[in-house]
Image 1 (spheres, rainbow, N blue to C red):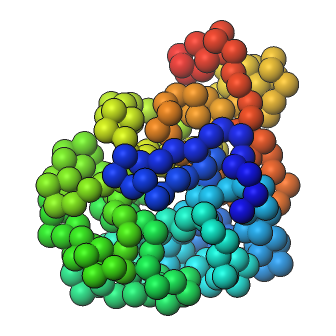
Image 2 (tube, rainbow, N blue to C red):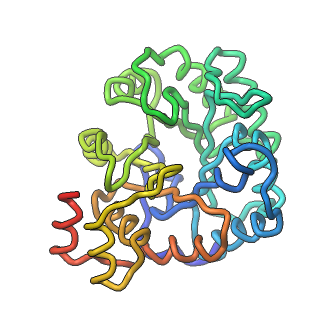
Length: 288
């Protein structure tokens, strides 16, 4: 691996071997439209993955239900054998139907099979970290998760998973999961315009848990803010870079997984890790 990119790293308290660059890469957009089917440009997809690693990213977020299967196969093709220090963080808890719909898949046998599928398609003997996806893209689902998280904890004890995390969860669900096994990451929707999880982010920071903000640029509905545009113009950065920089300065526990299928856009995102916002800019953005 090259030297870590600007923006620093985060190591969860419960996982001293899991040092993540705070500016990571979310591989979801490497699949086709709707995160379904093959990429429009396979060569560019491979180049994006290799460039991310060349630029120092040590945190790639993925899942076997991206595509499905497509993204994990791309990652293996582009990066296997994986360089030392690169961490692939995957997630389980959903499946896709033939039309691309996202369906819950949280029964014990399905969870075990999903872990095996991720291992096989990524070409690994053990997964660095696996997030249990409880809610959907629309947000957390308030439901008990101890049984489901317990399945992953058993696979961790068997050596198939090194660390466990959660995705689309509430603070109460985090507490419930911690009664079963240590939690090293929480992956929830969070960006400059959607801060419903302010308290959960602060809790994660206090407890040494990485808070992986997905859709940091708004996801399928890109961020739009006159204040963001104004601040970005004043500091000489793009609105997207400014939004990412704000997230990195929001909390030391924030790790970002912006996604793109373009090498040029990837480079722009990663450059945001070196952008330091002045206090007046932070104050304006805090008020968005």
